[in-house]
Length: 353
Image 1: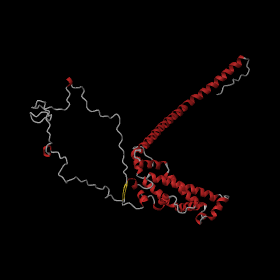
Image 2: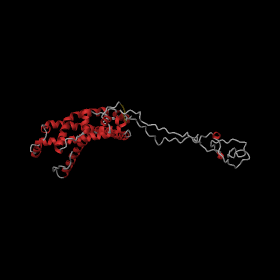
Image 3: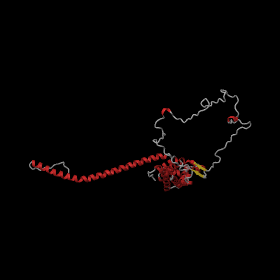
Image 4: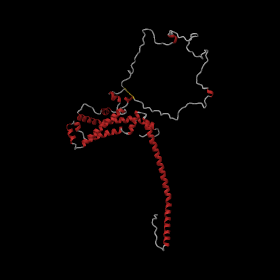
């Protein structure tokens, strides 16, 4: 579904909400590739002589469990709850022409009388009301040798009594957090998460190439080398037919086409980074502007065409009159020339009317 163009940003964000259902259908479609995965597993085990290695782990998991959460893929357990990251709509940046410079007076205060917001009160002391810490009168410039008692200035320096040392209690954080709660990227599905989705596409392309190669080998009956090599292969490899492999290949390519389409790529990028919607919005607005310009040009050309047809219809009678007049003049000129040369027949050439 294409945006209508009324509010491109909001329409794109609304389309992202439909992305999980589309990816779920892709995950459900991967279940049809179970036989193809087993065929690839048997081929790798036979050719590479490594029966213990498992190929296409993520594709095999999605084919068995569908498009489940990353938490289940990573831990093997179903989460008790999912705390998905919210897709918030970023506020538009302020325009440069909306700067608030404040309310400045039309004219500065006269005489330099600037009010700095400082109030100076009169004091009875002679030092302009400033207490320099000299103490009582007559004790200027003396510093007491012994410190004051604790209660004099109200400051507790933490000396306390002997035997009352300070203790620090360390509280472990995160011990009460539930283990089966999927948060952040773990709450996303396998096809919503960028890393697992790329791995899924890589494994699906790997399976597609294997099926395409296997189909070529089955259809090429003259490949004696491949036929001789598969004589000792398991029954699973020898029992495959061309139509069956072709159907599996079509399913793999259909899933790849759904995941790698341009619209799904844009929606996945918006889901991974909401700021990406700005780029897509700007691109779509540019396309809409180009479409409007082309529509305007089409209307202008259609109008000019109608004007040209109307002008042609108006000039056709005049053109016919001119042609008739030219023929009359041609006959008069021929007659005049023939009269001058003793009645000889004269035919004017090069006049195409």
